[in-house]
Image 1 (cartoon, helix red, strand yellow):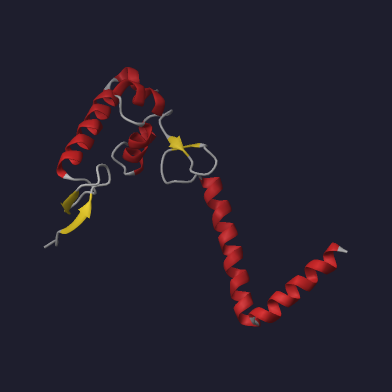
Image 2: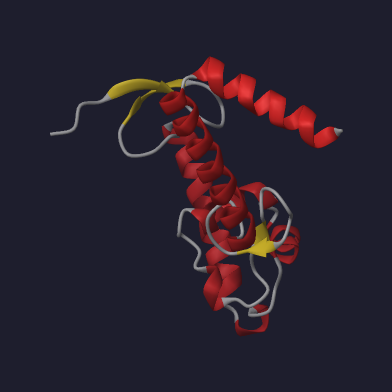
Length: 142
């Protein structure tokens, strides 16, 4: 049994009992109508090579909403060669997640380096590590 809790609708901000969605009853109905209009548009064979902008212009649904449908897996963008949204970092066209593969790899590498430095700093002792790191920096600068 799922316990219902009060929450604010992501679209209109009104208070509602949260079940399975982040939207109130009225907004959920509106979102479903938008999804259905997109699904009907994409079913047509002549719309196979459309872009996100084409879908938005033809259906009146915002780019952000369409990208959310793709991210949530409601629209399977892999079936449409030009349908996708921008990477959150570099704006490259992607079809899932928030970041493209290159940006994800770069961020995860940077994060791993930072975590290793933090671990080393804890092992050595933060004062000694900071002092040795600063002295090496100034030695390299000369």
